[in-house]
Length: 158
Image 1 (cartoon, helix red, strand yellow):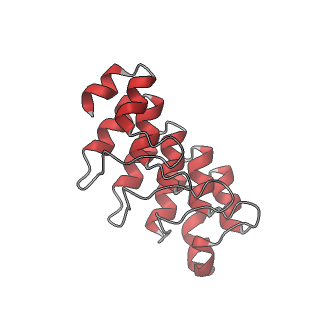
Image 2: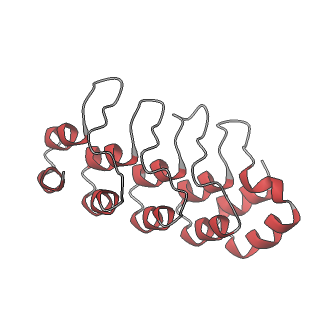
């Protein structure tokens, strides 16, 4: 774990630029337990300004964690229902909108399954988003999952 991980964990965005400039290799460093980067930490803890600071300092928006379902920061933010954070991550020019986790699920799959209408909408507005991906366990699409969970508004969007 690095000092950037601690800043991300505690939501200290003002320290990010200095630490990233002093220790540039640490911006994408992984902690040893789950292989999470500072960006994963900030997303998990809900620190939007810290996420924005990390992205502006060059954090890789698409790195997956290890031992924690191979989630990207975007998938993590979606799972936690963090709408503003999802929008910030989607604004990054290199975002891999269709990146899958270890179970084959995309950010859209997670949003639709949870009935997260606002997040589903913003994901559907992204160019190139795949709407018919299937998870590897049940082979269900986001539409099927949303329907099974009685998320009528999400079903209508899909």
